[in-house]
Image (cartoon, rainbow, N blue to C red; front, side, top):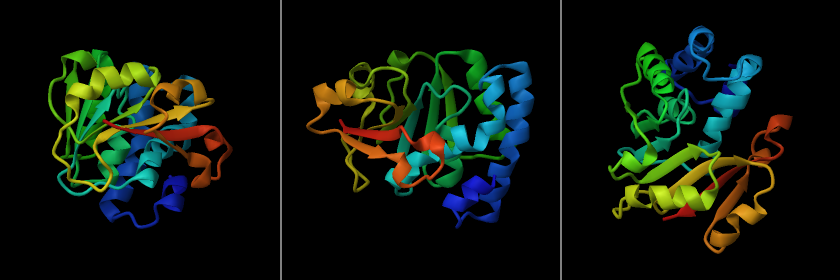
Length: 206
């Protein structure tokens, strides 16, 4: 938990309590439904929570912003971002029902009021959002094809509406088709831990 306050020192008491509660909740749920690698659960705050919050180091969001977390799994990056931005609306979507259940139960347990959930494939979700966020395993161009329909034309934030995803490793080939408008932000500029050496936030306006 200290790693969160190290980079986000201005949390409210409620936010601190919500972040602090995540470890025991994920530990408990993970023993029933595997949403995080068993070997990785001890790294929950660094590899999952702080990684999710890397998006917040790239951009803030005005109150009332609507964000869809596509392929949320156990709630990443959606749940950490929803804690950090209580006045922003998050809609967490995943095609695996049991993962959606874990994310829903954890959000309820910590009292998050700004999240909704849906068990469906990305293609089935028709609502409009300012941004789609994802810890993306899918190639960027495939992701863009799917989410284009979900991006609202109404602008509220300084950052134009679009896709903000967390990626790792060598991305040159992947961003090539959209490189003229893609922004790649290295998380090792803001987080000093070795885990973030190759981690990036990739933003594409839509």
